[in-house]
Every structure is written in C-alpha cells, then in structure tokens.
Image (tube, rainbow over all chains, first blue to last red):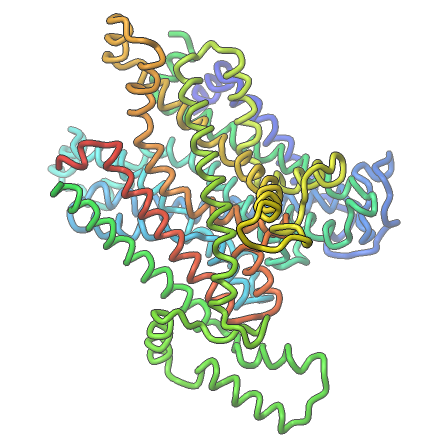
Length: 285
Length: 334
C-alpha cells in the first residue's frame, strides 16, 4: 500500500498536485473543529469587512467570519460527499460482484435495473424530493437519495472486472474447496476491484458535492446548514456581486474549484495507475 | 437487417421500462410523502389573505377533488396513468387555469434546442480534438488543450455559468445574459427574432460546451492512445496510408463506439446541467419552469415537468442507441 503511494507521488505529477490540493482543503475543513464561533449563528461580527489580518477571508453581510464559516461549510460538504460515496460504493460493489459472478438471469435482471437507473435524470428527481419533503430534507436524507442514484455506472465497471475473475483458476479452486459464494466474493474478488472502487470513489464525491452545490444554490436544500452551496446561496440572496462584497463569492468559488480539480486529478491518476500499460509508459520501464 | 430489428426491439423495451419506472417513481415520491398537497396549497393561498372558514372548507373540498387524494393510492396510481396517457396533468397553480401540460410544451422546444445544439457541439469538438491529441501526442497546442480540459471539466455547471455571466454581463457586456429573445421582436420566422434567439442562446450554450467538452476530450484521448498501439495502425502507417485517413477512418472510428455509449449514458447528467444553466441565464426552458414551479408550490406542474423530462431523456437515449449500429457493423450482422 505504501509502495503504491510512493510510486504514485514519484511518477505521477497529477497525483501529487491533486493530493496537495485536496490535502489543503481537508486541513482547512478540519480547522472547523477548533472554530471559536458557532457557524449557524448570524451577526456575530462586523458585516461586510474585506479580507484583512483580523478577518482572513473577510466577513459577509450576515455578520459571519467567512474563514470559520467556510471551514464549517467545507467540512459539511466533504462529509456529505464521503457519505454518498461510501453508501453508493457499497451498492455498486454488491451489485457489480454479484452480477458478474452469478451471471445468467441474475446478471440480466441486475443490469436491466442498472440501465434504468442510468437513464433517469437525477436532478428533477432530487428537486421532486425537495418539493415534497421541504424542511424535512436534511443532508443525510439527501445523501441517501443520491447514493441510490450514484451506483449504476460503477456497478457496470465492477461487473466487467468480476466477469473476468469468474473464469480464473483461483475462483475454481475456491469453489472446489467449498467456499460459500459470499466468501468468494468478499475475500477473493473484492481485493481485485478495490482500485476501481477507490478511483470511482473520488469521482463519486465530485459528482455528489457538485450536485449538492447546484441544489443548494437554488435554495433546494436546508439553507441553514452551512455547506459550499449554501454559502453561495446566501451570497446570491444578498446580491454580493452587485453590492461589491466580492470575497463572499470569490473565496468559496476558488476553494471549491481547488477541491474539484484536486479530487478529479486524484481520480484520473488512479485510473491511469490501474491500467498497467499507461503505468509502465509513465514510469519509463 | 434481422439483427438490427432485434437490437431496436430490445432497446425499445428498455425505453418503455425506463419511462414506466421513472414515471412511477415520480408518482410514488409525490404521493407517499408525509406532506399533503391539499393542505400545503391551502396554506399558501390563505397565507396572504383573510378568508372566512366556510370558504376554506369549500376550497379544501375543491382541492381534494382536484388532486383526488381521498381515493386509495392504487386507484390514484391508475388514474394518474390514464390521465398521463392523454397528456393531462391538471391545471397549473402558477398560471391558473392554464393546463400544466401547455406550460411544459411551451418550454420544451427551448430546452430541446439548447440541449441538442450544445451536446452536438460538445461531442464533436471534444472527440475530434481528443482524437487528434491522442494521435499526435507530442503536439504542444493539443497538450495545452488537454490541461485546459482537465482544469475546466471538474468544475460544476453552476460555477462556469456564473463566471460567464459575470464576464459577459458585467465586465465585457457584449451578449444578452437573460431571457430567450429580446422584448421588441415578434416571435415567428423573421430575421430579427431568429438572430435574437441565437444571440440569447449563445451564452447558455457556450457554458454547456465549456463544461462538457473536457470529458469527451479526455475520454477520446485515452481511447485513441490505446488504439494507436494496435498492429493494424502500424501496418497502415507502414503501407503509406495518409495520416489523415488513418486518424479519421481507422483510429477515431473505432474509438468512437465507446464514446457513443457514453453519450447515451451522459444525457441524463447533461439535462441536469441544463436546468442550472437555464436558471442562471433565465432561459425560458424546462429547468426554469421546474424551479418556478417548486418555488410556487405548484404540485401538478412539478409532476408534469419531472415526468416529461424523464420521458424526454429516455427517448433521446433511445435515439442515440439507434445510431449505434450505423457505426458498429457487428450489431447489424448479429
């Protein structure tokens, strides 16, 4: 595990940049654990102060210190992304491995369901959920709903790997040794798909955080819960750009772009690492 | 020919299944929720004015009948489908008494045009540039293009649209940033109207293209850089086939197949992006309508937009799937 990490850092500049970007953002988000102010309170400080030594990221029109506000927002958004990614990974691993290993009608049924989930545009569905749940929609419910829609692409990918594993020698050995199907899947096949799971994990986080931003900007989430999206929502509702409080929009957008590019670089560099052909080309072997 | 029909049949079955499950899901979400549409509509209507109790009771009875919520859930479900087949979603509350379907049909052409144009441009630009970048791996310009693609691709639609809005709306105002066409033209087949429509569509389309092309570019580059290592490419090069022919007819054509599948799979996501883009640029399409409907608490309109968008995306995926055999002769021969 450590050797993989070292190789990636040494031979893959994208991975290193991604790691630094994500690391900075995670560190920033972790600072919120030491925050001196409660991010849900408003008018705790002087409003509309530009960035200065006292207020590093300035303060917004709601009288919040943007540094601590954004720190909490990024913690919430990253937690949200992690929750969606973990939950949807569980579904996609379960579906992908089962469909690939069992084959036959199980495979056909699962892939049929899979194709339906791929074809349903998620955004109107999420808006529909918000429309009926309104303020009962907390971020965990949203994460759960998104996880239900975030698995199909990756389940197909995992299935394609599992299809190949099925006919390998060691699988047959395991079957003859009397291993149960569940054990074969979890102990023999799962390690082979883990690299895909990791790289799609990043992509899934990107997707879910992006979607949350989109929903929140429109005001379709719990707007009192600080996230990246709600920070932008409040900035828009106070016309920050027009009033001239540019830092209220610019700083979250810069941080968000850092997060997204970082996660994306991690995902593509891992993807490349999984493919031995491109890995060798890069290492010059 | 037989293989093609078989393929189309399978896809058509899938299309029907997607529409059935998608529409059922929208029904279930709206009807199994703890919130009663009658009470929420009533609350909205009585919030701004004082009404006497009898009027409220009468209104509640009328709304209950309108929504049909006093019936058991399965009969509501059957009702829902029978009315849906006739294209009837009931009157919209946002623009009472216009039927919700009329509003949706008014908005649909805008979204379809914007989405189709933006997707075609994105797909073409991304794939052609990506293919060239994969084939000429040492070209400086294409390498720089790749960096730009990596930089822009992960940024959410909202942020890109918003930045475009600021750049072309405030800093360098050359394009209209809001609406579908200018106020002072009459809709119809006349040049001022058409040019105004094109001008107004430029920014939304451009922002969709900017976000979208990176994914196709990176995907195509990766695919092509794998295809060029194949023996038949080396053979063609040694045989002296023109480089442009190799790229266009041999390499890109083979790499295009997985991209076309990806296009079908990405349409749902692209649609979600369009919703945001429309909202940012105040474009009169389905997305803006959906958001207005949610904000106004318009139950039937939200249901209508959700149903129509699920159906529209499913149909467009079906159309892309139909193109597949044209590129892949194996499907025809099966």
